[in-house]
Length: 408
Image (cartoon, rainbow, N blue to C red):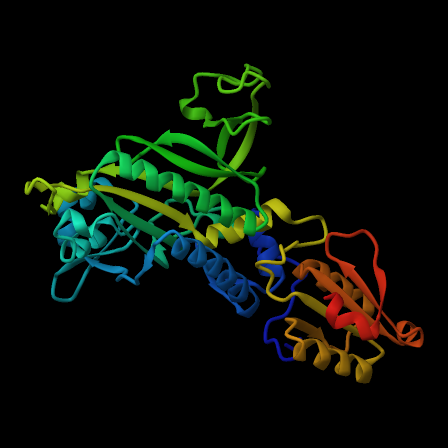
């Protein structure tokens, strides 16, 4: 894409009411536009990143047998009243139509997915199964903050699984746990899993996936040697205590941001909707249910918080809007040829063909955070070379023009 054709432009300053790093950088870089507190529109660069995150999530969910669906976000009130969520969940957006019917905007999908699966799962032979969707969610947050990490409208992947017994649920949970770690690793993040209260969703212990970042809203204790990690709210240990799991290291405290969770819902929702199946003994039985959430827009915000530097965003290659940022400095004709060569080779390129100063182009490139910056100038062309700099590197390297497509 030519930068002259990109309708968005970078900004020197973010809105004064934005306090979070992710919102500041994403707005300045032209990735998102703030509509109001907790609500953001995703612009071309931002949507490219979000689509890549969603595709990573989709690939991992498909790999473990999840079946993708798309459920409604405007819900009738009746299923919410059946589960008690209508009165119990204070962040639920409630609407009344002109016909005086009551509706809710989906903040989770248990009330829709449970009766949906009930129509198709009749026997133990139909279980286990897992369905998921990636879509919009709505929560009436009193204080929407932290940019796209905590909003009133946000993107989320939620998967629901149904099982005949606890052993099978535990088996599937371990599979999902590994899949979640795969997602975070592919997104350039190092995540830890903690135990926490199930909150509104479940009276049982839930599991939360955390990424260490100063912008986090949670306080955790973790071990640097083993995988032990716990939310400070329910921890019996304290910082400096020996790790209760490996006994090889002292626990450290840190700020962390939740990037996913899993809830053991037991039989609650099945009982709420009278959902039973025929077991092997011919008895009608309630299935066990699991819920697996992952905020996709939140994940994008956490990536920015965790990986950015003083100059701007640092996108991992897997989710970057483009692989290469091609900057033309007084070498437009030759830069055009290189742009065509790279795009013909299948390389995703944002081509800065603007009539702008070199300093402005360099600053914008660092802000936008594309993994590779390629500079074409009369000086480099005289040597038959292109200046290539990784976003995370301190210095550039000179690459022969003929080798550029393969190098990238």
